Every structure is written in C-alpha cells, then in structure tokens.
Image (tube, rainbow, N blue to C red; front, side, top):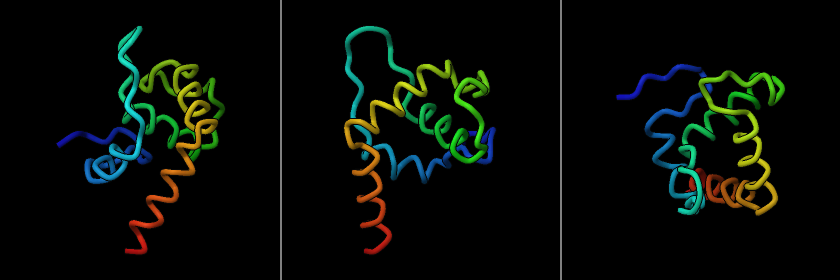
Length: 91
C-alpha cells in the first residue's frame, strides 16, 4: 500500500476510478510525469488555495502541473471526468 503524504492525495481506490478517465500521454519527447502525481498536485492547489508557484517541490515543477491542468481544461477532459464521476455516483 502506498503512503499518503498529503491529505489531498488520492487513495489507491480513488486512483483506480480516475486512471481510466484520463487521456494517455504521448510517447514522444521526455518521459511524462505520472498522471497520479499531476492529479495529486492539482488537488493540493485546489484544496489549499496556494498559488501554482508555491506548489511543494515533491509534486514536481509547478509549470508542468499547471501545463497539464490547462491542457486538460482546454481539451474538455475535466468536463468529461466530471460527467463520468457524476454518472458513477448516480448508478
């Protein structure tokens, strides 16, 4: 079992629900930052209210986290995740 470092980190059960909802990263270029780490960082910023630049270093560069957040927002990933989670709760 993984240790949860921050109260905003996803549990293994929560990650099992979220993982299939996210787009797969492209295989070109640098190795991608794990999506779970990105989500944990985004949840930290949203819950704590801190600025992106004040994100703890354990989450990786804030520019990377913000870049993924912005990319997913512009491509509609957050709306799709929201709709799918709402459907799962209502089933």
